Amino acid sequence: MRKLAIRIVGALAASVAIGAVPAAAQDEEPRWSIAIHGGAGTLKREDMTQERGAAYRTSLQAALDAGAHVLKEGGSAMDAIEAAILLMEDDEKFNAGRGAVYTWEGGHELDASIMDGRNRDAGAVAGVTGIRHPILLARKVMTDSPHVMLAGKGAEEFAAEQGIETKPPEWFDTDARREALERLKAEKLSAIDVDIKFGTVGAVALDKEGNLAAGTSTGGMTGKRWGRIGDAPIIGAGTYADNRACAVSATGWGEFFIRVGVAKEICTRLTFRSLLRGGEPFEEGVELTDAESQAEVDAVIADVGELGGDGGVIVVTPEGHALFSMNTSGMYRGRKTSEGLNEVAIYADE
Ligand code: ASP
Image (cartoon, rainbow, N blue to C red; front, side, top):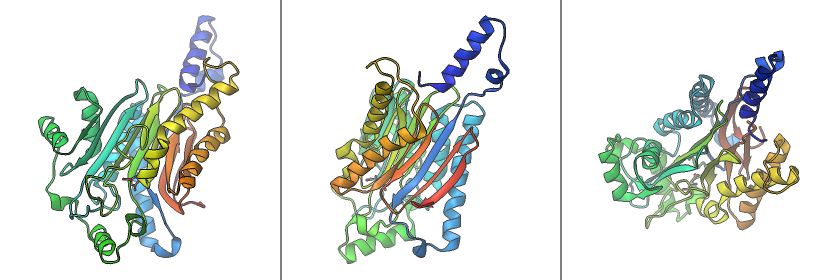
């Protein structure tokens, strides 16, 4: 059976039934695990000042700690990912909420999605403007509308009805992102050339109850137009969570992540690997090792690369493995688990 948290409870229950709880089982706390990202892209040490690198690491650690605190206290995976993403949406270093990239016309159109692995409920918003925390709006779509995805003006009307906080356009503006748009236009670059660090944010978590959740929030790609939507708000591409499989949040060149269906593809592969090792198809799967899970995740990112796309993912499995995979030179990221792992990193080789 794949859900360790449940298995421990089961072990305790069985022990209680026979009147003796083994010390090891008594001591064993249900696991929790969280991973976050702040975007993948061309991140070179020589382009990054010491201070800027340190500032990114501080922000990542703060978001990671906020999410981990919720999990440690017995809160839900949904609340943990929300806590982590809220901080990064307000942090202008990241391309989500405040600090989002500019559209061709000089505005900010925000995309976000969230998914609850318990029941595969999901919510998403695409191309919204003026929303301080698109992740909260995505969650409202999930909990307070009969839909999964709302876009543009309609999503903004729904936000107003739900009392979601808005901000004036200039609140989202930053010099660095404006300069990226100007450079893209002046040098006729593509968003890929100018977005040397993408900056989308995401979080995935496993809580003590064994529930998984995933969320992603972004301003998309610099200079986007014609209502372009990337993978971030698309359930199955940029975000997916299923307690039986995994939780995934992606970042990178969205068109490729949509074509591969990255997030769902990773979950499907992990499910099948688990079932196959279990022997009989469609029986409950067996636990996967860290290396087995990593191999499946890497294979999907390699597939994105074969099509010509780049980016990365964060993944948490039902076993509590917190994994990264990327084919870029860096991804702002962090992971923290009940097993004592606590790390933030920027470059692919750290
Ligand atoms: N995946 C996002 C998009 O294509 C961009 C990013 O992750 O940086 O909109």
